[in-house]
Image (tube, rainbow, N blue to C red; front, side, top):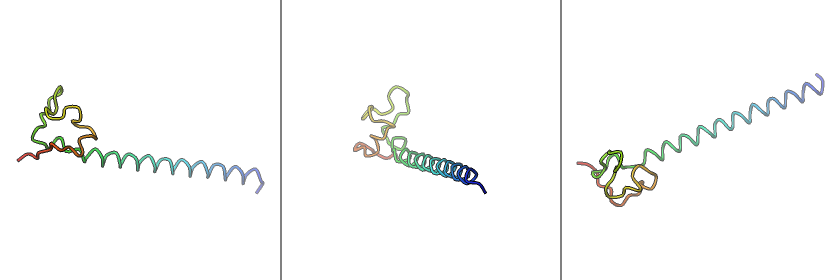
Length: 78
């Protein structure tokens, strides 16, 4: 085997491994984002209206955002 063939094989292998690592990191980031979005309690709150213009009359600026995860005004529906 020539030195050129070994160098080419190592270069391509390194590139493929780097692509695989990057893809797995991308998937992991996506899973973490989905978990964070599922922590938003707005849709289960008594004050949530579901209206386009005013989703929450108590905290309209935080409705359906990550800022609503620890909302002090959250009241579960009965």
